[in-house]
Length: 453
Image 1 (cartoon, rainbow, N blue to C red):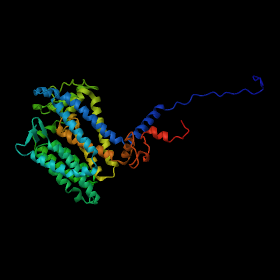
Image 2 (spheres, one colour):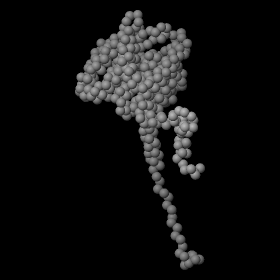
Image 3 (tube, one colour):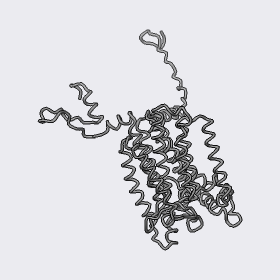
Image 4 (cartoon, helix red, strand yellow):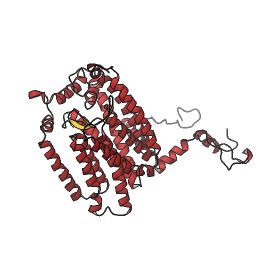
Protein backbone atom coordinates (compact mmCIF):
# COMPACT_ATOMS: atom_id res chain seq x y z
CA UNK A 1 0.00 0.00 0.00
CA UNK A 2 1.18 3.46 -0.71
CA UNK A 3 2.96 5.19 2.08
CA UNK A 4 4.12 1.90 3.67
CA UNK A 5 7.28 -0.03 2.74
CA UNK A 6 6.12 -3.13 4.61
CA UNK A 7 2.76 -3.31 2.95
CA UNK A 8 0.98 -2.59 6.22
CA UNK A 9 -1.62 0.10 6.48
CA UNK A 10 -0.36 3.29 8.09
CA UNK A 11 -0.93 3.65 11.78
CA UNK A 12 -3.63 6.15 12.48
CA UNK A 13 -2.63 8.30 15.37
CA UNK A 14 -5.38 9.62 17.52
CA UNK A 15 -5.30 13.28 18.22
CA UNK A 16 -5.17 13.92 21.95
CA UNK A 17 -7.65 16.40 23.11
CA UNK A 18 -6.86 18.61 26.04
CA UNK A 19 -8.29 17.22 29.23
CA UNK A 20 -11.32 18.97 30.56
CA UNK A 21 -10.40 21.52 33.17
CA UNK A 22 -11.29 20.24 36.57
CA UNK A 23 -12.77 22.45 39.21
CA UNK A 24 -9.48 22.65 41.07
CA UNK A 25 -10.73 25.31 43.36
CA UNK A 26 -13.71 23.26 44.45
CA UNK A 27 -11.53 20.21 45.00
CA UNK A 28 -9.07 22.23 47.08
CA UNK A 29 -11.87 23.62 49.21
CA UNK A 30 -13.33 20.14 49.62
CA UNK A 31 -9.96 18.70 50.64
CA UNK A 32 -9.43 21.53 53.10
CA UNK A 33 -12.88 20.98 54.57
CA UNK A 34 -12.25 17.24 54.85
CA UNK A 35 -8.94 17.77 56.62
CA UNK A 36 -10.48 20.31 58.98
CA UNK A 37 -13.35 17.93 59.73
CA UNK A 38 -10.93 15.13 60.54
CA UNK A 39 -8.90 17.46 62.75
CA UNK A 40 -12.02 18.51 64.67
CA UNK A 41 -13.01 14.87 65.18
CA UNK A 42 -9.69 13.82 66.70
CA UNK A 43 -9.95 12.70 70.34
CA UNK A 44 -7.47 15.30 71.65
CA UNK A 45 -8.93 18.30 69.81
CA UNK A 46 -10.88 19.59 72.82
CA UNK A 47 -7.89 19.05 75.11
CA UNK A 48 -5.55 21.08 72.91
CA UNK A 49 -8.13 23.80 72.27
CA UNK A 50 -8.78 24.32 75.98
CA UNK A 51 -5.13 24.20 76.99
CA UNK A 52 -3.77 26.23 74.09
CA UNK A 53 -6.64 28.71 73.90
CA UNK A 54 -6.60 29.51 77.62
CA UNK A 55 -2.81 29.93 77.70
CA UNK A 56 -2.84 32.21 74.66
CA UNK A 57 -5.60 34.36 76.15
CA UNK A 58 -3.74 34.61 79.45
CA UNK A 59 -0.39 35.50 77.86
CA UNK A 60 -1.96 38.08 75.54
CA UNK A 61 -3.88 39.44 78.51
CA UNK A 62 -0.65 39.93 80.46
CA UNK A 63 0.83 41.86 77.54
CA UNK A 64 -2.24 44.08 77.25
CA UNK A 65 -2.45 44.63 81.02
CA UNK A 66 1.14 45.86 80.98
CA UNK A 67 0.41 48.17 78.05
CA UNK A 68 -2.94 49.48 79.30
CA UNK A 69 -2.01 49.98 82.98
CA UNK A 70 1.25 51.91 82.70
CA UNK A 71 -0.34 55.36 82.53
CA UNK A 72 -2.79 54.58 85.33
CA UNK A 73 0.05 53.39 87.55
CA UNK A 74 2.15 56.48 86.85
CA UNK A 75 -0.83 58.74 87.59
CA UNK A 76 -1.12 57.03 90.97
CA UNK A 77 2.63 57.64 91.64
CA UNK A 78 3.34 53.92 91.27
CA UNK A 79 5.91 52.10 89.11
CA UNK A 80 4.76 51.60 85.55
CA UNK A 81 4.83 47.81 85.93
CA UNK A 82 2.92 47.77 89.23
CA UNK A 83 -0.33 46.26 87.92
CA UNK A 84 1.53 43.93 85.57
CA UNK A 85 3.56 42.45 88.43
CA UNK A 86 0.44 41.79 90.45
CA UNK A 87 -1.30 40.22 87.47
CA UNK A 88 1.75 38.11 86.67
CA UNK A 89 1.85 36.84 90.26
CA UNK A 90 -1.85 35.96 90.05
CA UNK A 91 -1.24 34.20 86.73
CA UNK A 92 1.55 32.09 88.27
CA UNK A 93 -0.66 31.09 91.20
CA UNK A 94 -3.52 30.47 88.78
CA UNK A 95 -1.26 28.30 86.66
CA UNK A 96 -0.53 26.14 89.71
CA UNK A 97 -4.27 25.89 90.41
CA UNK A 98 -4.90 24.98 86.76
CA UNK A 99 -2.28 22.23 86.89
CA UNK A 100 -3.63 20.85 90.18
CA UNK A 101 -7.24 20.91 88.94
CA UNK A 102 -6.30 19.24 85.66
CA UNK A 103 -4.64 16.35 87.52
CA UNK A 104 -7.34 15.82 90.13
CA UNK A 105 -9.77 12.92 89.66
CA UNK A 106 -13.45 13.65 89.17
CA UNK A 107 -14.43 12.25 92.56
CA UNK A 108 -12.11 14.74 94.28
CA UNK A 109 -13.70 17.61 92.36
CA UNK A 110 -17.07 16.45 93.61
CA UNK A 111 -15.75 16.21 97.16
CA UNK A 112 -14.59 19.84 97.00
CA UNK A 113 -18.03 21.13 95.96
CA UNK A 114 -19.47 21.63 99.44
CA UNK A 115 -16.31 23.07 101.09
CA UNK A 116 -15.89 25.60 98.27
CA UNK A 117 -19.57 26.59 98.52
CA UNK A 118 -19.36 27.01 102.30
CA UNK A 119 -16.16 29.04 102.02
CA UNK A 120 -17.61 31.29 99.33
CA UNK A 121 -20.78 31.95 101.35
CA UNK A 122 -18.77 32.81 104.48
CA UNK A 123 -16.49 35.20 102.58
CA UNK A 124 -19.43 36.85 100.82
CA UNK A 125 -21.10 37.38 104.20
CA UNK A 126 -17.91 38.86 105.65
CA UNK A 127 -17.96 41.50 102.92
CA UNK A 128 -20.93 43.14 104.66
CA UNK A 129 -19.21 43.24 108.06
CA UNK A 130 -17.99 46.77 108.86
CA UNK A 131 -14.23 46.96 109.11
CA UNK A 132 -13.71 43.83 106.98
CA UNK A 133 -15.49 44.55 103.73
CA UNK A 134 -14.54 47.51 101.60
CA UNK A 135 -16.16 49.37 98.71
CA UNK A 136 -14.55 49.82 95.27
CA UNK A 137 -16.25 51.99 92.65
CA UNK A 138 -19.41 52.08 94.74
CA UNK A 139 -19.74 48.30 95.17
CA UNK A 140 -19.30 46.76 98.63
CA UNK A 141 -17.88 43.41 97.48
CA UNK A 142 -14.20 43.38 98.44
CA UNK A 143 -12.13 42.19 101.41
CA UNK A 144 -8.75 43.76 102.06
CA UNK A 145 -5.86 41.33 102.60
CA UNK A 146 -3.42 44.03 103.61
CA UNK A 147 -1.39 46.43 101.55
CA UNK A 148 -2.54 46.64 97.95
CA UNK A 149 -3.99 43.10 97.87
CA UNK A 150 -7.74 42.62 97.86
CA UNK A 151 -10.07 39.71 97.20
CA UNK A 152 -13.54 39.66 95.67
CA UNK A 153 -15.41 36.64 97.15
CA UNK A 154 -18.24 36.84 94.61
CA UNK A 155 -15.82 35.60 91.93
CA UNK A 156 -15.38 32.38 93.89
CA UNK A 157 -19.16 32.14 94.17
CA UNK A 158 -19.27 31.36 90.44
CA UNK A 159 -16.97 28.38 90.85
CA UNK A 160 -18.89 27.25 93.93
CA UNK A 161 -22.24 27.30 92.12
CA UNK A 162 -20.81 25.34 89.17
CA UNK A 163 -19.27 22.56 91.27
CA UNK A 164 -22.04 22.29 93.85
CA UNK A 165 -24.84 22.54 91.28
CA UNK A 166 -23.20 19.91 89.05
CA UNK A 167 -22.76 17.51 91.98
CA UNK A 168 -26.34 18.07 93.15
CA UNK A 169 -27.90 17.49 89.73
CA UNK A 170 -25.68 14.46 89.06
CA UNK A 171 -26.76 12.78 92.31
CA UNK A 172 -30.41 13.48 91.58
CA UNK A 173 -30.04 12.15 88.06
CA UNK A 174 -28.53 8.93 89.40
CA UNK A 175 -31.62 8.55 91.61
CA UNK A 176 -33.90 9.44 88.66
CA UNK A 177 -35.38 12.42 90.52
CA UNK A 178 -34.92 15.10 87.85
CA UNK A 179 -38.20 14.13 86.21
CA UNK A 180 -39.95 15.92 89.09
CA UNK A 181 -39.80 19.70 88.89
CA UNK A 182 -39.53 20.08 92.68
CA UNK A 183 -36.29 18.10 92.77
CA UNK A 184 -34.96 20.02 89.79
CA UNK A 185 -35.50 23.39 91.47
CA UNK A 186 -34.90 22.60 95.13
CA UNK A 187 -32.40 23.28 96.57
CA UNK A 188 -30.54 24.51 93.46
CA UNK A 189 -32.60 27.65 92.85
CA UNK A 190 -32.88 28.72 96.54
CA UNK A 191 -29.12 28.39 97.06
CA UNK A 192 -28.44 30.29 93.84
CA UNK A 193 -30.82 33.04 94.95
CA UNK A 194 -29.03 33.16 98.32
CA UNK A 195 -25.74 33.76 96.51
CA UNK A 196 -27.40 36.37 94.32
CA UNK A 197 -28.78 38.12 97.42
CA UNK A 198 -25.34 38.28 99.03
CA UNK A 199 -23.89 39.70 95.81
CA UNK A 200 -26.65 42.27 95.39
CA UNK A 201 -26.19 43.47 98.95
CA UNK A 202 -22.91 44.88 97.69
CA UNK A 203 -24.52 46.30 94.55
CA UNK A 204 -22.59 44.14 92.04
CA UNK A 205 -25.19 43.67 89.30
CA UNK A 206 -22.67 42.39 86.74
CA UNK A 207 -21.56 39.39 88.80
CA UNK A 208 -25.20 38.65 89.62
CA UNK A 209 -25.96 38.43 85.88
CA UNK A 210 -23.13 35.92 85.37
CA UNK A 211 -24.35 33.84 88.30
CA UNK A 212 -27.87 33.87 86.85
CA UNK A 213 -26.50 32.70 83.49
CA UNK A 214 -24.75 29.78 85.23
CA UNK A 215 -28.01 28.84 86.95
CA UNK A 216 -29.94 28.80 83.68
CA UNK A 217 -27.14 26.86 82.01
CA UNK A 218 -27.38 24.14 84.66
CA UNK A 219 -31.18 24.00 84.40
CA UNK A 220 -30.99 23.75 80.61
CA UNK A 221 -28.44 20.92 80.80
CA UNK A 222 -30.65 19.13 83.33
CA UNK A 223 -33.48 19.13 80.79
CA UNK A 224 -35.80 21.57 82.50
CA UNK A 225 -39.16 21.75 80.70
CA UNK A 226 -39.90 24.91 78.77
CA UNK A 227 -42.62 26.16 81.10
CA UNK A 228 -40.35 25.70 84.13
CA UNK A 229 -37.43 27.36 82.37
CA UNK A 230 -39.62 30.29 81.29
CA UNK A 231 -41.07 30.61 84.78
CA UNK A 232 -37.67 30.91 86.48
CA UNK A 233 -36.49 33.26 83.73
CA UNK A 234 -39.54 35.47 84.21
CA UNK A 235 -38.93 35.73 87.96
CA UNK A 236 -35.27 36.60 87.41
CA UNK A 237 -36.18 39.17 84.74
CA UNK A 238 -38.76 40.81 87.01
CA UNK A 239 -36.24 41.08 89.84
CA UNK A 240 -33.68 42.51 87.42
CA UNK A 241 -36.11 45.16 86.16
CA UNK A 242 -36.89 46.24 89.72
CA UNK A 243 -33.19 46.46 90.60
CA UNK A 244 -32.46 48.52 87.48
CA UNK A 245 -35.44 50.85 87.92
CA UNK A 246 -34.55 51.60 91.53
CA UNK A 247 -30.95 52.56 90.72
CA UNK A 248 -30.20 55.79 88.82
CA UNK A 249 -26.69 54.53 88.07
CA UNK A 250 -27.99 51.35 86.39
CA UNK A 251 -30.60 53.33 84.46
CA UNK A 252 -27.89 55.66 83.18
CA UNK A 253 -25.83 52.67 82.01
CA UNK A 254 -28.85 51.26 80.20
CA UNK A 255 -29.38 54.56 78.39
CA UNK A 256 -25.78 54.56 77.13
CA UNK A 257 -26.31 51.59 74.82
CA UNK A 258 -25.24 52.67 71.34
CA UNK A 259 -24.30 56.19 72.50
CA UNK A 260 -21.96 58.21 70.28
CA UNK A 261 -21.86 61.31 72.47
CA UNK A 262 -20.97 61.58 76.17
CA UNK A 263 -24.28 63.34 76.79
CA UNK A 264 -25.21 65.74 79.59
CA UNK A 265 -22.88 65.51 82.53
CA UNK A 266 -20.66 63.07 80.59
CA UNK A 267 -22.93 60.20 81.69
CA UNK A 268 -21.80 58.03 78.77
CA UNK A 269 -18.15 59.07 78.84
CA UNK A 270 -16.74 55.57 79.31
CA UNK A 271 -18.97 53.93 76.71
CA UNK A 272 -18.24 56.59 74.08
CA UNK A 273 -14.48 56.59 74.59
CA UNK A 274 -14.48 52.82 74.34
CA UNK A 275 -16.00 53.21 70.86
CA UNK A 276 -13.42 55.92 70.06
CA UNK A 277 -10.60 53.53 70.96
CA UNK A 278 -11.97 50.75 68.77
CA UNK A 279 -12.64 53.12 65.87
CA UNK A 280 -9.13 54.59 65.88
CA UNK A 281 -7.45 51.18 65.75
CA UNK A 282 -8.21 50.40 62.12
CA UNK A 283 -7.28 46.99 60.71
CA UNK A 284 -3.92 46.41 62.39
CA UNK A 285 -3.98 49.02 65.14
CA UNK A 286 -1.72 51.88 66.08
CA UNK A 287 0.92 49.59 67.58
CA UNK A 288 1.48 47.93 70.93
CA UNK A 289 1.77 50.60 73.62
CA UNK A 290 0.62 53.42 71.30
CA UNK A 291 -2.92 53.81 72.63
CA UNK A 292 -4.13 57.37 73.11
CA UNK A 293 -7.31 56.65 75.07
CA UNK A 294 -5.43 55.04 77.96
CA UNK A 295 -3.87 58.45 78.75
CA UNK A 296 -6.69 59.30 81.13
CA UNK A 297 -9.55 59.46 78.61
CA UNK A 298 -10.81 55.89 79.03
CA UNK A 299 -11.69 54.83 82.60
CA UNK A 300 -10.81 51.29 83.68
CA UNK A 301 -8.58 50.81 80.62
CA UNK A 302 -6.78 47.79 82.12
CA UNK A 303 -9.83 46.10 83.66
CA UNK A 304 -13.34 46.26 82.21
CA UNK A 305 -12.35 48.09 79.01
CA UNK A 306 -9.10 46.34 78.16
CA UNK A 307 -10.77 45.01 75.01
CA UNK A 308 -11.09 48.60 73.76
CA UNK A 309 -7.36 49.22 74.27
CA UNK A 310 -6.67 45.95 72.46
CA UNK A 311 -8.71 47.19 69.52
CA UNK A 312 -6.86 50.50 69.46
CA UNK A 313 -3.36 49.02 69.65
CA UNK A 314 -3.82 45.73 67.75
CA UNK A 315 -6.70 46.76 65.53
CA UNK A 316 -9.46 44.60 64.12
CA UNK A 317 -7.00 41.74 63.67
CA UNK A 318 -6.24 41.69 67.40
CA UNK A 319 -9.86 41.85 68.54
CA UNK A 320 -10.92 39.14 66.10
CA UNK A 321 -8.06 36.96 67.35
CA UNK A 322 -9.26 37.34 70.93
CA UNK A 323 -12.82 36.61 69.82
CA UNK A 324 -11.67 33.49 67.93
CA UNK A 325 -9.80 32.20 70.98
CA UNK A 326 -12.90 32.55 73.16
CA UNK A 327 -15.02 30.90 70.46
CA UNK A 328 -12.60 27.95 70.32
CA UNK A 329 -12.66 27.69 74.10
CA UNK A 330 -16.45 27.70 74.11
CA UNK A 331 -16.63 25.09 71.36
CA UNK A 332 -14.23 22.82 73.22
CA UNK A 333 -16.24 23.13 76.44
CA UNK A 334 -19.47 22.24 74.62
CA UNK A 335 -17.76 19.27 73.01
CA UNK A 336 -16.54 17.97 76.38
CA UNK A 337 -20.02 18.35 77.88
CA UNK A 338 -21.67 16.67 74.89
CA UNK A 339 -19.43 13.61 74.60
CA UNK A 340 -19.21 12.48 78.20
CA UNK A 341 -21.32 9.79 79.87
CA UNK A 342 -20.70 11.12 83.38
CA UNK A 343 -23.54 13.46 84.44
CA UNK A 344 -21.30 15.44 86.81
CA UNK A 345 -18.77 16.08 84.05
CA UNK A 346 -21.54 17.16 81.70
CA UNK A 347 -23.07 19.63 84.18
CA UNK A 348 -19.72 20.99 85.39
CA UNK A 349 -18.28 21.41 81.89
CA UNK A 350 -21.50 23.05 80.70
CA UNK A 351 -21.56 25.36 83.72
CA UNK A 352 -17.93 26.46 83.24
CA UNK A 353 -18.50 27.02 79.51
CA UNK A 354 -21.63 29.07 80.22
CA UNK A 355 -19.76 31.13 82.81
CA UNK A 356 -16.77 32.01 80.61
CA UNK A 357 -18.78 32.51 77.42
CA UNK A 358 -21.48 34.65 79.03
CA UNK A 359 -18.93 36.83 80.81
CA UNK A 360 -16.90 37.33 77.63
CA UNK A 361 -20.03 38.23 75.64
CA UNK A 362 -21.23 40.71 78.27
CA UNK A 363 -17.82 42.38 78.51
CA UNK A 364 -17.28 42.64 74.75
CA UNK A 365 -20.88 43.69 74.18
CA UNK A 366 -20.48 46.55 76.66
CA UNK A 367 -17.26 47.73 75.01
CA UNK A 368 -18.91 47.60 71.58
CA UNK A 369 -21.90 49.58 72.84
CA UNK A 370 -24.33 46.72 72.26
CA UNK A 371 -24.99 45.99 75.95
CA UNK A 372 -25.03 48.11 79.12
CA UNK A 373 -21.77 48.38 81.03
CA UNK A 374 -22.04 45.65 83.64
CA UNK A 375 -18.60 46.05 85.23
CA UNK A 376 -17.45 42.46 84.62
CA UNK A 377 -13.88 41.69 83.49
CA UNK A 378 -12.94 39.79 80.36
CA UNK A 379 -12.09 36.26 81.58
CA UNK A 380 -8.37 35.42 81.69
CA UNK A 381 -7.64 38.75 79.97
CA UNK A 382 -8.53 41.70 82.19
CA UNK A 383 -6.57 42.78 85.23
CA UNK A 384 -7.77 41.25 88.49
CA UNK A 385 -6.42 38.35 90.50
CA UNK A 386 -9.74 37.60 92.18
CA UNK A 387 -11.28 36.89 88.79
CA UNK A 388 -8.23 35.13 87.34
CA UNK A 389 -7.71 32.51 90.07
CA UNK A 390 -11.14 30.81 90.04
CA UNK A 391 -11.31 31.09 86.25
CA UNK A 392 -8.00 29.26 85.81
CA UNK A 393 -9.13 26.60 88.26
CA UNK A 394 -12.28 26.20 86.16
CA UNK A 395 -10.12 25.86 83.03
CA UNK A 396 -8.24 23.12 84.85
CA UNK A 397 -11.59 21.38 85.37
CA UNK A 398 -12.25 21.43 81.63
CA UNK A 399 -8.75 20.09 80.91
CA UNK A 400 -9.28 17.25 83.40
CA UNK A 401 -12.62 16.39 81.83
CA UNK A 402 -11.15 16.51 78.31
CA UNK A 403 -8.33 14.17 79.36
CA UNK A 404 -10.81 11.81 80.99
CA UNK A 405 -12.60 10.93 77.73
CA UNK A 406 -11.89 7.28 76.80
CA UNK A 407 -10.55 8.14 73.34
CA UNK A 408 -8.42 10.97 74.77
CA UNK A 409 -7.01 8.67 77.46
CA UNK A 410 -6.06 6.11 74.83
CA UNK A 411 -4.42 8.76 72.64
CA UNK A 412 -2.45 10.19 75.56
CA UNK A 413 -1.40 6.72 76.71
CA UNK A 414 0.16 6.03 73.30
CA UNK A 415 2.33 9.13 73.64
CA UNK A 416 3.61 8.59 77.19
CA UNK A 417 6.13 7.49 78.19
CA UNK A 418 8.19 8.16 75.11
CA UNK A 419 10.98 5.73 76.01
CA UNK A 420 8.72 3.05 77.42
CA UNK A 421 9.07 0.96 80.57
CA UNK A 422 10.38 -2.45 81.26
CA UNK A 423 7.55 -4.89 81.74
CA UNK A 424 7.30 -8.08 83.64
CA UNK A 425 7.35 -9.09 87.29
CA UNK A 426 10.38 -8.11 89.41
CA UNK A 427 13.35 -10.45 89.86
CA UNK A 428 16.35 -10.58 87.60
CA UNK A 429 16.58 -8.74 84.34
CA UNK A 430 16.70 -12.03 82.43
CA UNK A 431 13.04 -12.71 83.20
CA UNK A 432 11.88 -9.27 82.11
CA UNK A 433 10.52 -8.52 78.69
CA UNK A 434 12.67 -6.47 76.32
CA UNK A 435 12.23 -2.71 76.29
CA UNK A 436 9.43 -1.55 74.02
CA UNK A 437 9.67 1.84 72.38
CA UNK A 438 6.35 3.59 72.17
CA UNK A 439 6.85 5.34 68.85
CA UNK A 440 5.32 4.97 65.40
CA UNK A 441 8.76 4.15 63.91
CA UNK A 442 9.29 1.16 66.23
CA UNK A 443 5.77 -0.17 65.71
CA UNK A 444 6.19 0.12 61.95
CA UNK A 445 9.51 -1.72 62.06
CA UNK A 446 8.04 -4.53 64.15
CA UNK A 447 5.30 -5.06 61.54
CA UNK A 448 7.80 -5.71 58.73
CA UNK A 449 8.91 -9.17 57.64
CA UNK A 450 12.31 -10.47 58.78
CA UNK A 451 13.84 -10.13 55.32
CA UNK A 452 12.66 -6.58 54.68
CA UNK A 453 15.13 -3.72 54.97
